[in-house]
Length: 151
Image 1: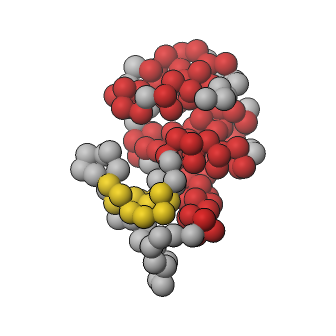
Image 2: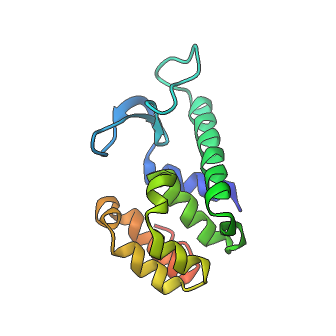
């Protein structure tokens, strides 16, 4: 998978912040960088705000590594997908966490069997779809077509 593309997509979808903020989840979680959950993973010792671009990138690389590991452990078939659909699942897992992603049982089953229009329809038929807006529209289109929209 082209990690450079995944990093760019996550930067677009999560935004980039050098200082902590509360995300939109219920309850809100303190977040920094590119969607880095400070409650789940505090900053390394000695890091101060504002974070440097290099620190933000390091958090992103580490968080994506954790995301890919969770996908490997829980959905070992995901690596057999084409690159675009791999990035769809990685983006969703990064956004939701593995536990919530695994709740998309019908979408994941359809993805595994290659029924991509069904998988996209299942993704659209979710609370997540209404919550994340343009991101969800892009990811559903990418799941259905195998092409990641530019915007």
